[in-house]
Image 1 (cartoon, rainbow, N blue to C red):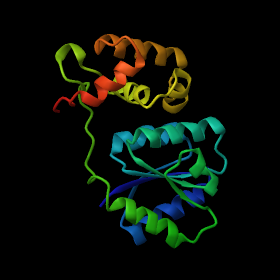
Image 2 (tube, rainbow, N blue to C red):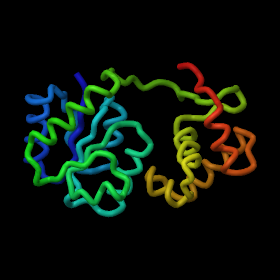
Image 3 (spheres, rainbow, N blue to C red):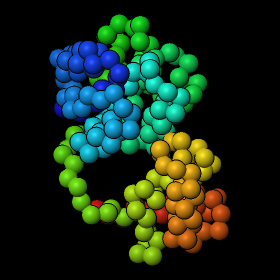
Image 4 (cartoon, helix red, strand yellow):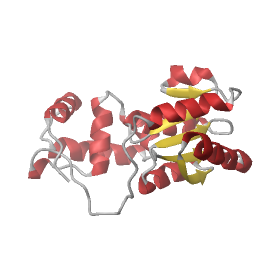
Length: 198
């Protein structure tokens, strides 16, 4: 069984989608939210693998935030909205007017490829990187990954929901920890460095 989270401003739609996905796709809906940041935070805490997000009623900044979360790859995001979201970087889009079977098929398809659900226990800071002096926190690693993808500080800020100054500080810390002089070196080190064991 895999875990889903439903994001929508419409409470009736959230409940209906949760029931539909549980009955037809075998998905456990562990969270029903109307705020994207709360939905992503809860999804991280509860081991959600698929977030179903209705785009109607979302601001542009909320949509960019969700597109960024999907790009980072922490979980799969299925957007319920217009097909033009594909051109904005969304990987999984189901038109809101499509039949329920299309959404169920998409969730089942993704559910077969996601990692098994597990309970998430809060633990000490997980460190990433190859050596003790080059260890990165989870947030630093996330920012380094986005730097490696060629994103600017402003784009990283929009993607992660962090303030731009915080992103600038994190990029500096990453560059210092990885002993890099520029963003290209960060990308090269990130590609070549193994992830430390848990």
